[in-house]
Amino acid sequence: MTSRNAAVYALLTLGALITLAPFGLGVLTSFTPARQFATGTPLSWPDPPTLDNYADLAGAGFGRAAAVTALMTAVIVLGQLTCSVLAAYAFARLEFPGRDQLFWVYVATLMVPATVTVVPLYLMMAQTGLRNTFWALVLPFVFGSPYAIFLLRQHFRTVPNDLIHAARLDGANTLDVIVHVMMPASRPILVTLGLITVVSQWNNFMWPLVITSGDKWRVLTVATAALQSRYDAQWTLVMAATTVAMIPLIVLFMVFQRRIVASIVVTGIK
Image (cartoon, rainbow, N blue to C red; front, side, top):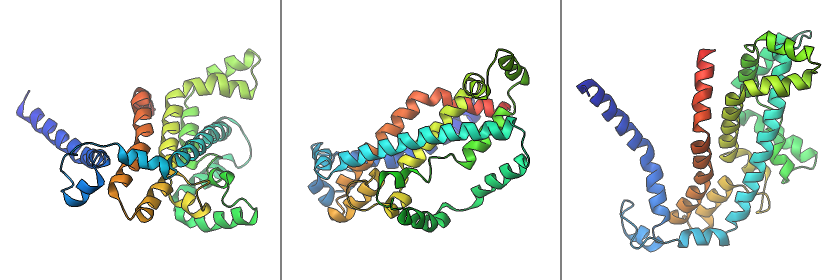
């Protein structure tokens, strides 16, 4: 190994340590007794390690918040992928007046900050009687996103026309072409979009905080924030909640990391 390669690996290792250190400290704190954390230093090793912080989460209703978050995320991912695929196919392959103009106007909404739409969305949900319901959590996000539609539309335009013509000759209709031609050809990108949606919705805080109240439809992010005031900012409990919230995302990434790399290669080549 040359000195140049050694320096590059050293910098990469340092960057990885800086990135992972806060997560490691959070996990370490989650196993630390509250009394030790209050009297010792944050970097001290748990003596002894304890699971009391995780046990206290069950009594704080954290399990229900996790179930609500999982259900909300699943519904949004299914809705976003379905609607995004249909919309992207229409913008990529169907001919209708004003198609390109409508597409670019829709994509331009990416420039609008999400906070700008919070008040209008809240008023819509309140006036329709959906405030503090499950549907209020999912409806603003379930019908696709500009980023997903843009990415899929650009990929659909690169699928060879011969595949579509062959499917048409076999008697396939538009829905058959989408399901049996477009979606298999776009599997890596669909997996990546699904993971991006899972991460963004699993960590969504602003909208659930605004549109829900009480414990019934509280999600993980709001429940974790509530621990700081409800339990007088017991950081060992907060770190346990944060660790629990991270585990599903880490597992998903480890399971689908090959798909993510494949999607990056595909989009880079295209």
